[in-house]
Amino acid sequence: MQHVQEYLAKNKDRFIEELIELLKIPSISADSAFSQDVIDTAEAIKSALERAGCDTVEICETNGYPIVYGEKIIDSNLPTVLVYGHYDVQPPDPMDLWNSPPFEPEIRKTETHPEGAIYARGACDDKGQMYMHVKAFEFMVKTQQLPCNVKFMIEGEEEVGSKNLGDFVALNKEKLANDVILISDTGMIANDIPSITTGLRGLSYVEVEVTGPNRDLHSGLYGGAVANPNNILAKMIASLHDENNHITIPGFYDKVEELSKDERNQMAEAPFSLERYKKALDINDVHGEEGYLTNERNAIRPTLDVNGMWGGYTGEGAKTVIPSKAFAKISMRLVPNQDWQEITELFQQHFESIAPKSVTVKVKPHHGGQGYVTPIDTVAYQAASKAYETTFGKIPIPQRSGGSIPIVSLFERELESKTILMGFGLDSDAIHSPNEHFGIWNYLKGIETIPYFYQYFTQLS
Ligand code: BES
Ligand code: MN
Ligand code: MN
Image (cartoon, rainbow, N blue to C red; front, side, top):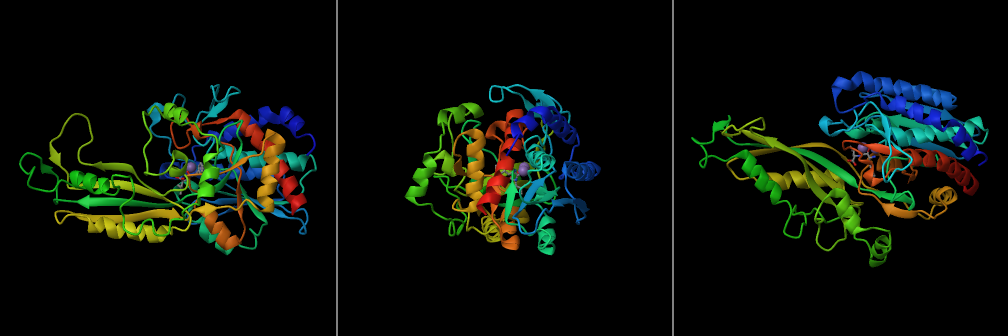
């Protein structure tokens, strides 16, 4: 690849400016109050893809938010890379914890990012990482170095479970046909320890409702004699883990893939400091399943977590009340071979079975998806590895991530191709949290590395 450094030096201010403009649009897919902004973001991506050099770009309508599709086909005999990303973002709340407003991007320097980081919702997840691909593509087109065909599929519903993407993919298999899928929506170990994500966890997300009496009651007049849904729900949830932090749902672990000693030893070689991990989170100790290391607990083991819990009086001051209902949102991260629908059913059966007669419970499944593991003995992985080696000067470490991009396993099933996860974010970038940011160094490094993937992938194919 000629002149990538030069092109970056000349254009980096514009690349940052363009990303900042994109980050100003609050494309929050979860909140219908922002639906026009989500749609406006799709339009902005369309025009960015056109300017970067796509031959055709379409806004593909769905039952939800549109999918932006663009392509540049230079020769049908050459390989085709399909880039996937998402332009929607998580809600920014709690707002008062942001040091600068989430949709007014600000560049600030930090210890981890001495060259500055862009602070905004979506900076890393996924507008910044998705836009690296648009700019890397621009570089290849404008310098006549695009070595193969490219297709872009950028969706607006990833953060709410990609509800309509599955149908779109199933209906457009030919249009989306490719030799490899390339995604930057994950992270790496550190800026001086490059890694390639080789696995994602699956997900089952449910909401539970526990109902006691038919109305809120005075907690003095009725307290002690009637089931309190808040108390019952807390007890039911607590019972979902045993004293070793194993999940107690019968059958939950039946299909869990157990890694061999060798594989676990290999994982343990990845650089990791427990002390630094605890310090970064201000915790005195870590917590998790007995018999597994932190790096295993958050990548190769399934989990069950309460994401939110409410019921009764949560306003200012005190109100003495036994609520009629209590609620919780629960997510289970799954590992390869666990089927998310099966797990959802197991959860439902178990949760209903442990409810005392004094209450009724409802379990409402939200969304989910399968986990994914990518093999490393493929041309695509080798190409990615060589690309990192070229720009980082180090061979990247393959690493399984704890996060989920459920659509990846669907891509494999429907399009019969493997996905390469070239993430350039860091765990400390605070995705989904207040003060999300993305290092400018990381952004530019991504733009620099991606063209080498195209080059090596085409050469090796
Ligand atoms: N980009 C993330 C997933 C991710 C982040 C994977 C870092 C690996 C490393 C994605 O946008 C996301 O947030 N996914 C959700 C699931 C989705 C169905 C809402 C998740 O993992 O919670
Ligand atoms: Mn993402
Ligand atoms: Mn996300």
